[in-house]
Image 1 (cartoon, rainbow, N blue to C red):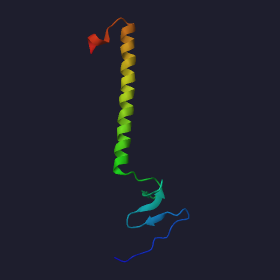
Image 2 (cartoon, rainbow, N blue to C red):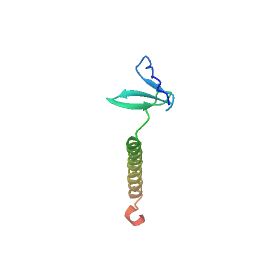
Image 3 (tube, rainbow, N blue to C red):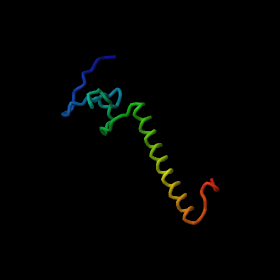
Image 4 (cartoon, rainbow, N blue to C red):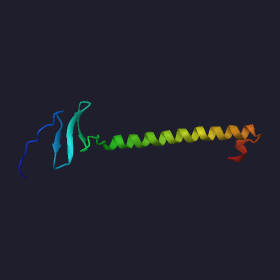
Length: 83
């Protein structure tokens, strides 16, 4: 394999033809970016994002459950007897 120098863009990013990605410093760390300059997340970042989404869904379901339980109580039904 022959070494080829990477020429930085005006913003200082390096395009790697081999990887099909840009390399740039982001928040003090060398990171990869797609051709449309979207940050490529690290596996732990993806896992954290998925966990956050699940936590948000769980919170929404808890709120929905509380609303439904209150409606049942307003109708004179004890939600504990149903669930």
